[in-house]
Length: 128
Length: 133
Image 1 (cartoon, rainbow over the protein chains, first blue to last red):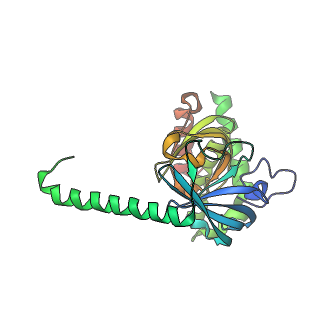
Image 2 (cartoon, rainbow over the protein chains, first blue to last red):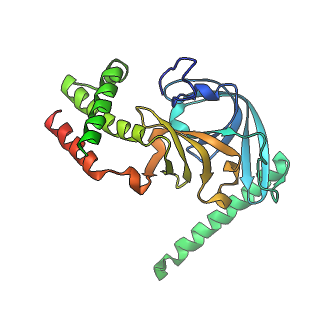
Image 3 (tube, each protein chain N blue to C red):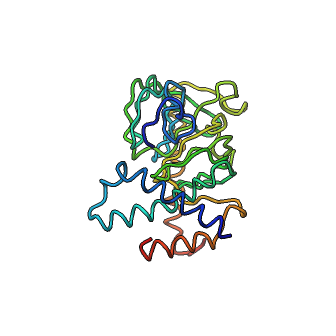
């Protein structure tokens, strides 16, 4: 990912061709940020303007606005160009409020915690 | 076979020469630096030859993405075009992503088209590397 001249940015692996475009940035902890790429460097450190986090729980989703974000490159998994023509998410998914998505997230976390403890208790059965 | 072989090494040498000043300062000793550079360059040039082919990139978070290889750089960062995620239902947020950049450090595997692998060529190139060019 080296700096490239204006004529070959579309051929190179540089993020230059994504500048000023609406992107989806996937992070190592599984978070999904959306925003406009304003700057980057060779480590894939990136500046996102108008960033928001897209939280998806089952069929519910919510975009939580964050503002201007500087992302440290090591946390970046993937940077995808968002196709504005296409449906962003499948039709069956519904947009909900921040409060609702937080609630859904909590329920999901509790369910997975419970599953974990149940599994731990049943471990002596040695199933797999 | 021999024609293709020469072609590979021309590639390799060009890349080594052109990127020495860019990539060299990260390695400790001159010998190690040279070797690492060449060793890295082998896969770099190999992937460069695969540009335009359909590949599947599997990431360390188990996300697998299929797409046309658009470009690769010295960190083995990858750019894919016309991407689709193998398990679409599990990753609905990837539906509207057509082109993407993947950081080299998060890649677990790159699955290549069968005709894209010339084992003998790679094998020879590796032996040559080990002998020191």
